[in-house]
Amino acid sequence: MKTITTFLPLLTIFCIILGNHKTVAFDKNLKGNELINLVCSESQTKDLCLKVLTSDPSCTQASLQDLVLISLKVAAANASGILTECKTLIDDPNFDPAFQQGLADCKETLLDAEGQLEDTIAATLANKEHDAQVWLQAALAAIDTCDASIPGDDDILSQQSRAFRHLCNLAISLSKALDSSSKMKPK
Ligand SMILES: *[C@@H]1O[C@H](CO)[C@@H](O)[C@H](O)[C@H]1NC(C)=O
Image 1 (cartoon, rainbow, N blue to C red):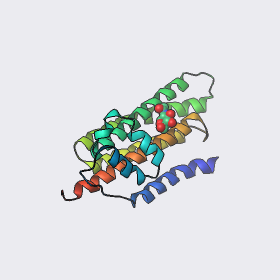
Image 2: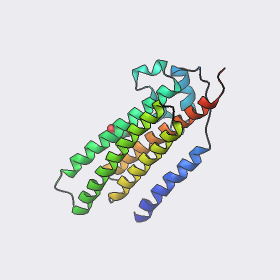
Image 3: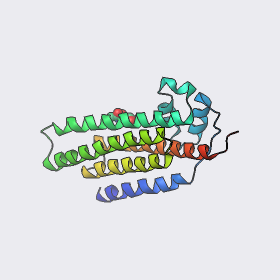
Image 4: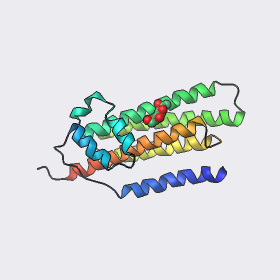
């Protein structure tokens, strides 16, 4: 168990580095479903990508920036949901003190992650993709800290934090795609 807990954050970092190599630039004129299909065909989590991006009714007219914002809103809602679950667990007196302490630490880092996602949304709206990616990496680090503060790898929060990491990584890859497409010369 211990080796896995130490290994997982490393693995996440490794995946982020690997993921960095694949950055594709998209035609600025593409919108909506056509764009979603194209972006998601490049995604390492294709099903999640399609599910997330089509979850917003405005997606049929969405530009790449709109899609980044949709993915960020889904990730932010996810972080809030995890925070709510964390708070519910904290109120349960049946857990041992180590687990309770882990939950209390986790609550703090989840609050940080929520704030970092708000900063990411602000940065994306201001066309500052680089800042957006830095904030997203901070949110990923926050959830890693949260996960590490709770003993065990198969508890509900470990599962939730894995799902949240996928959402953050999706937002990072979309933000990178937006960054490279905004550097392309307009047609
Ligand atoms: C977070 O998102 C994942 C993937 O979509 C989902 O399975 C999970 O239930 C969500 N968690 C919360 C608390 O909203």
